[in-house]
Image (cartoon, rainbow, N blue to C red; front, side, top):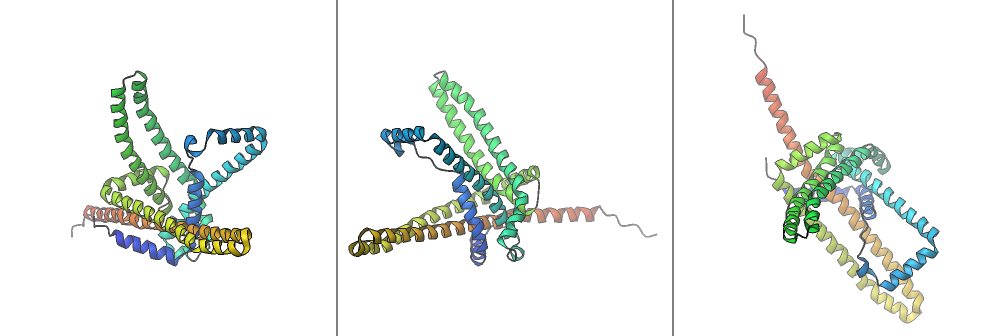
Length: 317
């Protein structure tokens, strides 16, 4: 297999997403869906004091209907965002796979076409999650049992062994999930064949895949730095304006400046995140084409050679 030029892949993805900004719309949906379906909850002891939790509990007990209504809306929005994330991911993969064709279509038409992959991708993700959870439970049972018997030394050994088993499995699940969705969308494969093909590609390209994963992680860190830098820059720009407004127009001017700065900050962050999601997915599609489709072409060549060797030339009479 030829060596992978990761810089060319990133450059190609950068130019494609910059020249086709309709992909940013799908990137925004993926970002919102990822955030909405994975809310980060802080630890109760670190997030608030006991007095604040007591106050919250009192409010909830006195307004149970309101909290149930709000909770239902939040759950509904999370589910919708989760579904939209799947379709938007398929839309990006499909568009990047044939950008010359899909750039002529509208965002709505691409989104509607990507919907036909929804159930397969959903089942594929649920299948991977289910298998991984089952493995975790199987590995956790002897560890919990050892601690229950107060065999702490053996329990810690079992816990360490469980950790060393789960980390490779998490990496495997990540790449099978990523490659499998591309088989589903780009080649219109079924779930079973996509999982098998994804495992084969990862097994044959472990080193290349891990390098791409490290690069992707580095890009996420760079995105986080860019977001923080943008926020700090906006604070430096709007803080003097807010101070000047406070001197001349008191609280009203400060409120207007803060609201304007917040709006600009949210817009900048959404643009950065939307672009990055489309760029990252495009880079993975190009990498996938390098490691998967080349194998496919090699297989076709081998089949062609075998076919030609199997043809017998009739003897001349």
